[in-house]
Image: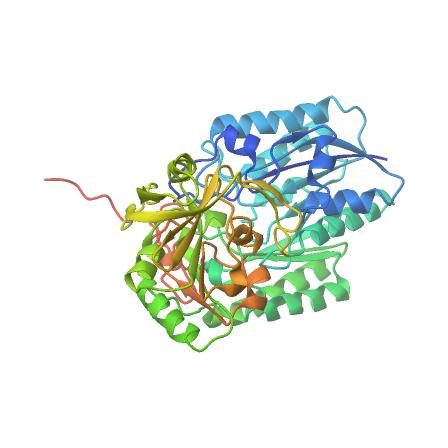
Length: 506
């Protein structure tokens, strides 16, 4: 049978400072650039991506794969209307001209908001469904952080989400979708979907499946799925998207509606029982550095600090300077910070040359409240063209082009400066510029959770810091306007009752 394959991924932080243009998808940065035709297969092969897992699994069958397009951009504010329409049109046009199809697979994120469309995935699925008709199986993989909408559930035969954060099971998820689709193509009927919304937002840092309570929730999910459901997913949601269907969702699929309802109700109850446990200590930059220095004084391994609010994997520009100020202010030694995205600083380092001393204003260009560029004199220790390949569990196999890059040193602190903004979730993102992470006393990673996959094995301890940035650790601090009334803004937090009334000026 002929199965069309495509993908369109973006995680949208509607409070972030910069939007995702078509050029962001065309370049890719930390992900493959916009791929079309057979380049979809070659350009994603061997990378920890759902589409790679789906393709690999399907190539072990007699079915024929027909490529459309695949695109992803680093998380940011809204996808521009131009980018959304151009990429959606490439996918839809390819489906229209593909001839007879027996199924369609899409590699989606689930938390895309465009300038003109709140539900990016629901709209794309509706357009695809309009092309292929109601009978053709349409299946999709989703990120664990998906904000699943009713429209997505309506148009897809199944939505299957990752079960790990850090997302080390992306290829495995694609393979699970392939396994489901094979059964549909063999004659299994379309299962009944049942969705249950969880009534509170869950902060990113407590969604980590390496830690409780999320670890046990996914263990219970696997046990429940083994009983009577075709597929069971829990998406804790991406809690920085200001639209009515933002929030955690449990999804169950089964041929028997009663079985789907039972599984969804049981798993939602498990999640809601853990509401109070969705919390973890978050330090100020100065507290985090003081604590890290005290730990490092007697440690043999690096202390890792997550600069969680400037996480480029959640819409941050990866250029805020709060943690750098704290490190320099405390005279931290054998400390490294990455990634600081500042193309102007990277170019200045390359123009000056290795070994030069440059005086620059580093970072702080994304206009985040409470942040500003860091003015200082830096030694240019190492230069790179920014081309490297990741080896850790999350970015495994990703071939990155970060642009002109530099290792800048001030006092005892080294800073990795690049032009593109993948999050610091792989040890190679230090090594490519001459920093051996295992030999540092303190590592500051601009990431919330994904870094744990590669850094937890080498860390003495992991701390979470709350420096200025657009991905707020306390989800109740966002200026919400469009959430569903009644949802709690954080675990055990206040319920959203609508935006505050506008104040009139006298």
